[in-house]
Image (cartoon, rainbow, N blue to C red; front, top):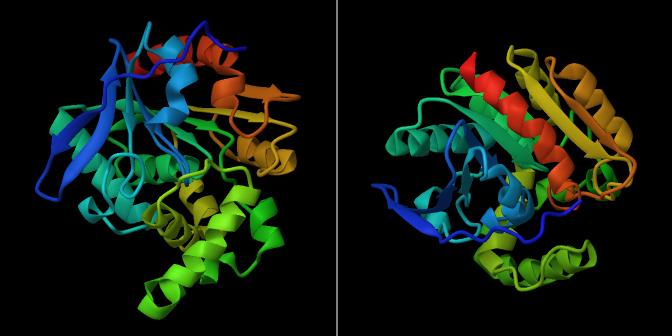
Length: 268
């Protein structure tokens, strides 16, 4: 269910020694840090944000190469490197603890942040998250993870970007993605190691909310179910429909569970 209208807060910029960071910061209360997928941006949270911001402090972050954060701010596409960069961002905002909310490829990034910086993360909220084994696109295009090095070769970069743009369009991703964003997506894909995600999850001992829909066209329901069974205890929100972007299609339902749970987790 959708709220009456979406939330599109004013974009803020944090100037750092590495470069500018685009984010939004709305509401009061326990802090929820929202991490989008690849591709993605702060706008991915505009519907659920409209509900969360009434009772929570919601910080939406544009990861480097996406939204308003330029890639030059932090070009490292690895999950470990970006988790450390996010911890620096939280430090600069003076945020000592939060619930890390991750959608799609933002899920394992939230897990990496919790594993590498446990003092800052009180709980995980994983929505339509990448799981512990390859989902549909990775099975359909098994060589996808090998594209990244070729995108760094000048004579191949533009041709490959054009081909990839058509693939992103066919998969239903937004039109108008920049070449830089498309390439960074593939660099992130190149760093996906499902075995390491499973190992990382095994190190975590903190509450976890997991939400997914059976009709997700990207993440198989069985993979989401396995992730939910592997995560520490917490709410499990399982929907028959809603697609991949349930932070939009099920915004109200997810927020109604996430708000009281996050409040308890952050008070513990």
